[in-house]
Length: 321
Image (cartoon, rainbow, N blue to C red; front, side, top):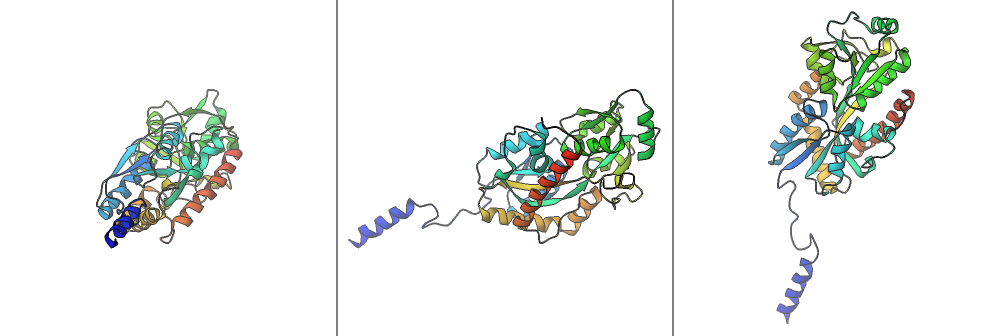
């Protein structure tokens, strides 16, 4: 009789996940990081820096998959439709998590379907022009543009490069013709080739092109000059109040278990503040948040940025598509 009761209890336990057995530790297989923009962009660069260090801690591969398209919506939709088990992460950004709701009437996902488990940092944008352009300052560019009768083309590859361009258009009075690209790298390549006149990529993407002399930077879009480029004026020096800052983040479906979210946050915040990683991120233009930013603080930051970018887009007079 006792044996039958014991077997019955064991049978009942088998019906309830997590009862009578240990949970499988995460991760026990490769983790996929979906970057919703192409190779060479800021999200791609930072996800690889952090992903390399995550592999050391997890003992599993963290595989980067570039899925560009629709200013980050293609990649975000892939993560939204993946299992909420922590094995498919989104490398989120200003475009996918903050600005798109104000730019598109219809979206393939809702940013509230995700939780930002860690913010990599914030990034200002450059104002880039051709290396042989006749203007060497924002004021000189404006004077040249207002005297020009032909169209002036501004290329953008994501929201964080489109909005500063549109704000510049409004505040300077220079009429810019928008040219859309899949991501910021092709826009810079067309700037180098002389097919467009200006573009506003973030510092992570544009830094190597500026330092190599392939393009000329006229300004940054932070409120103050960037420490990496102290001789480069801030746009606010010419147009007071002009400030546009982007961000990058590691994001998961909100249904991913809290324990996994917390583990990821702990690992990533530790990685961002490793001396060699922190130094590298600062060098390329990204400023990590404080070490004590937990999941709650990171997610709240992104929600605040969504409100802020709605204001930017309204000021830039960009109508939802």
